[in-house]
Amino acid sequence: MKLYHGTNIGFTDINLSVCRPNKDFGQGFYLTEIKRQALLMAIRRCAFTQKGTPIVQTYDFNEAFLSSQSLNVKIFDGVSKEWAQFIYDNRLGKKRNEKEYDIVVGPVADDGVVYQLNLFRQQLITIEQLVRELTYKKLNNQYCFLTGEAIATLQRV
Image (cartoon, rainbow, N blue to C red; front, side, top):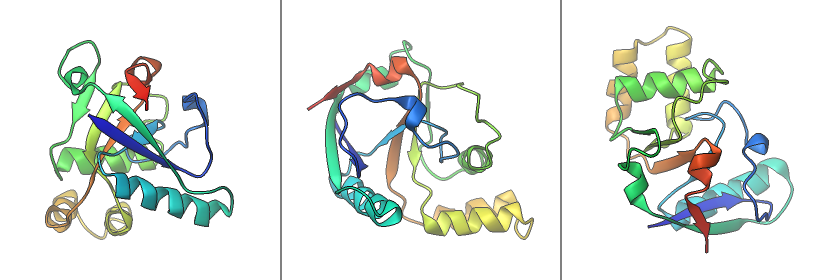
């Protein structure tokens, strides 16, 4: 399968140590199946940093690795209490040094999700209300590669 990564800086080797912490699924290399989504992320990154040019990098990934048992993979099939708690904990840095998975796949927490997460953090809504609010949102999927073993499964096109 083809996966896409949006960036504002060209590079050849993936260096997990320069990936930003406190993202949805932790500090890792994020990709998507949707080329346009990757482009929009690259454009957003350029606007935020005021540096670089939008770049979409393409990778081949053998999706058999998602079920091969050679890697520890977590797949969130959609919005759930477990997904919301996982993102919440990662964004707060509670899982910063944990590498319980090599790859995590699941919905992207967009700005609307972040707003709801903030309401939950402020204890203005419960986790059940958070999940209910997010269940009807159309969220794109993302793939997060968290370890060197996972990165080794990607082939740059």
